Length: 92
Image 1: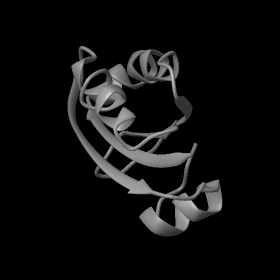
Image 2: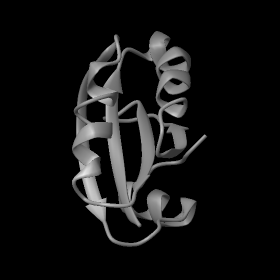
Image 3: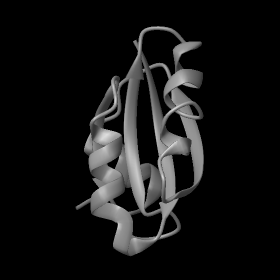
Image 4: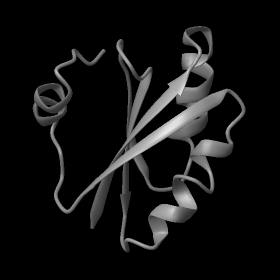
């Protein structure tokens, strides 16, 4: 299983709508609302590295209101503590 952390930039007033759309996608296991440079963090888990292209640029970046994405791929599962430490943010 491959885990990718997707940082999503969108307008603040669209966060609930965008988060709901992302959470409804296949392979998206968690979506966090954050404050800072990026407005949302989605944790995406897929079986193969090639599948990331389908989920991230293929689906997430095409959701209306998503302005930009940045992806960090890892080969392990992140915990909420790991995310907070890595990005120095508080997750809501």
